[in-house]
Image (cartoon, rainbow, N blue to C red; front, side, top):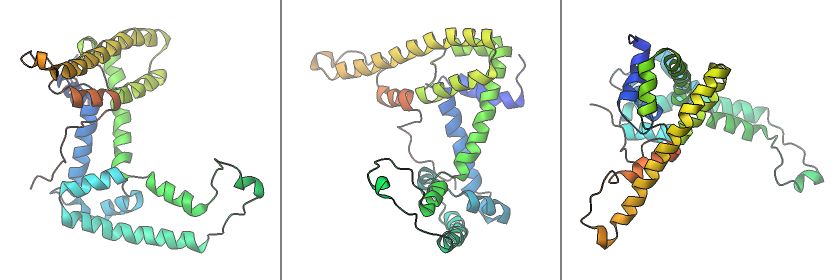
Length: 253
């Protein structure tokens, strides 16, 4: 099948022979977003962009990555106007706040649902992130592309079947996406391929980690490392996603 512009990133991720192509895409998209927000293009100086970042804010994880990125002025500009937005919202919340009445029954509930409007507002702010929100939109499009190629491109299917599978995190997303993107018989074929693929590759990682343990036995000090030298980071990635061994992504000055 002839490669299209929108299929190139996913095919690149598959060809990278990574433990999970969606981890590969996630890292690439996240780095592109950090470059857009804080990079040399200085989008943080544009009022319309900063209006969006002011509204969405950033999660704790991405604030850390923004700090590590290294653009002091860019971060300062973003924080300056974001603080103005948050303080304005906070004042409005305070002005309309009324403490909820607590009954005797509520006091004995261990998991009572909070009706505190300040707490609800803070949780809403914490759940909002400019980078996360943009990635979610992009991620959905890649899911669409994956299943389009799965149904249309025999070479793509072959690479998936012969590949290293996915991390558990993204495999769960893939299975959920299959419910709405595949018909009945297509689902059967999909899972008949995916389950053995995941079992085989999870076992491969388990064996790599197990051999790393054995290498610390003095009797195996001269034995071949096989594929276990980077088994820790690959094993962690397979279980939870991401790249534990990656250092901070820095601004290209």
